[in-house]
Image (cartoon, rainbow, N blue to C red; front, side):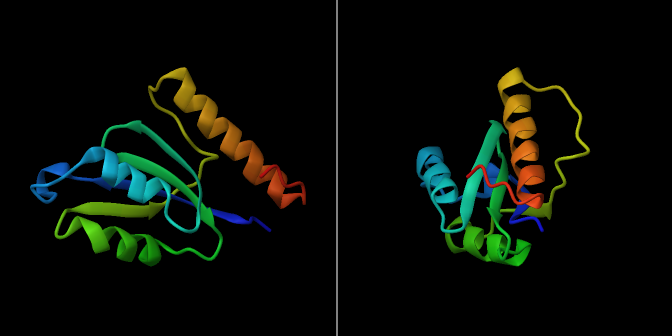
Length: 111
């Protein structure tokens, strides 16, 4: 059984509060309770690996606590089926997370 859940978060920064600080925003997302790992190789986009019990609604509620009325999308993401044009470092992170998740299904835990 997989121990983790993966979500993609895409947000619109033009609606963020006038005091928007990208570093503070990033720190809030990446240090949140339940976040196991994160990816941020495309601006305004995060991939979050979270503990299995964390839902898209939980992520949404957390984001709304500090983004106000900013438009954003939280959706479950399956890393197995992926493609696109990214830097090699971004692909390496995705492939490593996929390997960790597959190993967690077999009882091997690399975290």
